Amino acid sequence: MTQKLTILFDLDGTLVDTAPDLMGAHNHVMKKFGFHQKKLGDIKHLAGRGAWIMMQRSFKEDISDEKMKKEMVQEFIKHYAKNIDKGSKPIKGVVDFLKWAQSKKIPMAVCTNKQERLAVDLLKKIKLAEYFHYIAGCDTFDFNKPDPRHLTNVVEILGEDINKTIMVGDSEVDSQSAYNAKIPFILVENGYTVDEPTILICSLAYAVVATAIKDKLKIIFLNIYVSRLVIFKETHYVFITIKLQDLYCYS
Image 1 (spheres, rainbow, N blue to C red):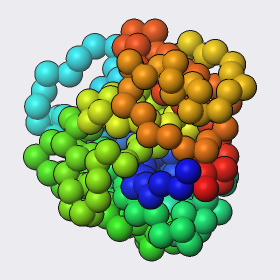
Image 2: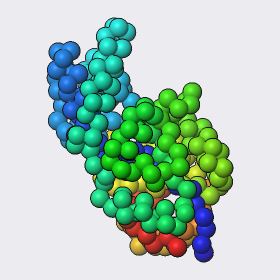
Image 3: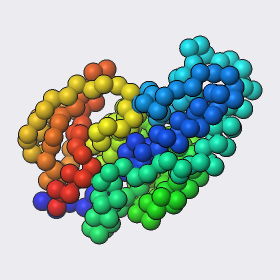
Image 4: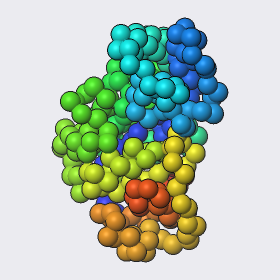
């Protein structure tokens, strides 16, 4: 069955591997303010909720100096903005998928907790901006992920149907956003997720799996072949995880 979809995407770790530049900015600030730097692999434990949270997760103790917090965030953004595409690149399979989706006239938008101007600048510089009808950052509205309005407002702006919308992301913040907005969520593997999900290997058609988990998510039926059914232990969000290019099966 063919069904027109609206697809909302997270940015970091979903569409673009931004780890080199995020960690570059992070370590620049850590060094300047006298804190320990982190390794590139630590991105999974740091990213997802904005610049300050990313840095805060590096500290053993909370910092109460509000002036220092502000200065650190400003320095992070300043350094990151200047080096935003130095090492960042589209994740494998993303460009081909976006070209395919565009050819099918599928409305697509980005919902990220990165500042809007930074998200737009990055996507323009790596030549992905043209695929999206709207790009919403953490400062586009008065709220951001996991608030469901960050997603529902974008769909409303696009003039599309929230009941025919899915969210594609790589983290629990993304899954929580989709859950709160009552839309299906697809987890992209190998992203910047902190929590280790319980993974059950499946070889069932999406519709069959959807029937089994209908009490957990509002499901729309697609011809997507499922590789895994994932359940986060703490939150019990249930969603499908596939490789992004596997969405080619949609027809």
